[in-house]
Amino acid sequence: MNVQPPSPFHAKIPEQVAFHRAELSVILSLYGHMVAAGEWRDYGISSLSDVAIFSVFRRTAEHPLYRIEKRPKLRTKQGMYAVIGMDGQVLKRGHDLKTVLRVLERKLIRAVE
Image (cartoon, rainbow, N blue to C red; front, side, top):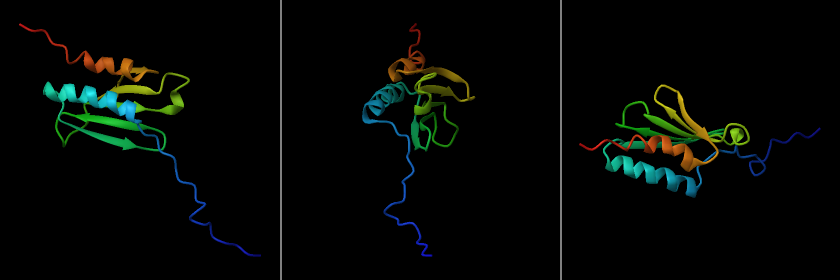
């Protein structure tokens, strides 16, 4: 019996969830406004097998203030986009990214004296 090792050309590449260009455009637009307001300073992007995460930081070497997550497996249930706070609490979840991100835009609005 001849047993051959699997060919590297036929190996299945593990799929990763990532933000598309249109989604990143919406997220980075909000990020730019928050940086200009002095609220945010840094960000990080993670693409894993089941979730894509855009993390927002006030300073580089600390825990993220917010995580914007994309979980395609939840698209038919709760919605694949979520904004999660520093403490792990889900602030907003939904099917439309712009609607979900409004929870962070409200933090930009301040009373002027």
